Length: 94
Image (cartoon, rainbow, N blue to C red; front, side):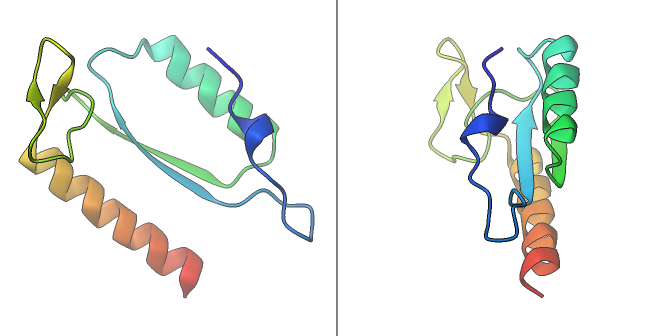
């Protein structure tokens, strides 16, 4: 899995910004999720990962409808991820 944290810029105080990551889980090995979490934590990033089981990529895009390509809209997961995003924004912008 490629390193992701190194691309996140630091602010003037030297901190990396908070991250909220919605994630589908249908084709992501659990080891990659654990490795990603370790990388984020080791880098001192304030992060959240919201995993939505059984959904494919583009699960928040109503027009996504190509399971062969690995994309499929899921209304329930889209609603849940939207609520999580709003909570995250409320926390960081309050």
